[in-house]
Image (cartoon, rainbow, N blue to C red; front, side, top):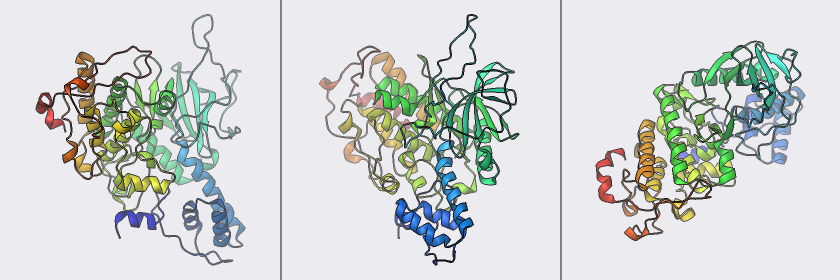
Length: 476
C-alpha cells in the first residue's frame, strides 16, 4: 500500500494536528469510543445525514457525551478559520478639524478577510465580550488594558479579531483574543501562544509585527494593523496579475519567508489569505498568521500521518503527512505564484480528498494554456517551485527572493529577463510540471512591455536569449 492509499484509508481530512485513525464501528446503545475518537471519526463524514446517524449510534443514550462531541465539532469548524483571519481592514476613518484621526465606530458588519471557503461573510453578531471593560468614549465598544476596542474585524467560536487604538502609543493595532469558552481549554491556548511566539521571533518588513501577547483577563495578541487587503481579495478583484506586479509581490513574499526560515521557522500555511497588501503605491506585502508555524527541528514535523495547512496550497509531503522542511513553504509559494499568474489555484478539485490527491499525484494545467502571454522564464520559475520532490525545487527562499528581484530589475531596465535558463520541455523531470509548448520561441514573437497603469493587463514578453542565461544557471 503506497503513501496515498494509506492517507485515503485513514480518512485524513482534518486540520487538527491529531494522528488520524480508521473509522471504528460503534456498538449501538453503548459507547465503544471516547469523545475524541468519536469526534475525529465524525470529521471524516461530510454528509450531514450520515454524520448524524453515526453520532447517534456512537454516542448511544449518553446525552452528555453527545453534547461534548457536538461542542467539539462546532469549535473545530470555527477554530480552523479563526487564525486564518488576517488583521486587515479597509479603513475609512474621518479626520476632525485638527487633522488627527478620530475614533469612530465603523459599521458592525465588516467583511472578514482571508476565508478561503466563503465569500468573506462573518459569523452572526453577538460575541461574548464580558472580558472588555466599559469605555468612556462613545466610539469605543470597550477597553482591554490600555487599548480602546473600536470594532470587530472577524469572529468565530474560537475567538475575535478587533481593530483597536493604543492609548499609550497613539497608534492603531489589531488584537486577536480567544473566546471565553476556548480560553478555558489547554490545546487552543497552546496554539494561540505558539502563533504569538513564532511571529514575535521574526523582525522583517514583510512580516506582520507582533507587539505583545497577554494572558489576562483573556489570552490576546497585539500586532500591527495593516490598512489594506489580503492578496486573496486583490486576486478576486483583478484576476491574473501582470508580470511586473507579480514579481513585486512575489519577491516580498519570498523575502518574508526567508526571514522566517532564518529563524528556523516553517510557516506551513502560505496562501493568498495569509498575505496582506498595504494600501498605497508601494504595495508593501506582509505575511501573517503563523498559527501553524513550527521550528524546523520540532518533532511534530516528522510525525507520520499529521496534516495541517490549507489543501489548495500545501506541498505533496505535507498532504501525505510526511517530514516537512523550509522547501514545503517553497512549494506553497509556487502555488501562490501560479494563482497570481493564472487567476486560479493549481490543484482545484470538488472535495478536500480530491484536492489532496491532485497535490500528490497530478501536474497542474500548463500556465501558458491559461494565459498564453506568460513568459517562459516565469513558467520555469513557478514549475521549479512546484516540483513534487523537495530536492528538485529551489533550495532556499533567499535564493528565490534574490532571483525574483533580479528578474524585476531586468524587466524594468530592458523589458527582457535573461537571468533564468528556460527549461526544455522535452527534458523536464517527470516529477515536476513541464513548461507548455503551445507556442515556439522566435525572435519575432517578442512583445515589448507597454501600456500604462490603467491597463487591465500588460502583454508579457515571451522570449529570452538562451545564451544570455548560461552564466546564471547556478540559480536553478
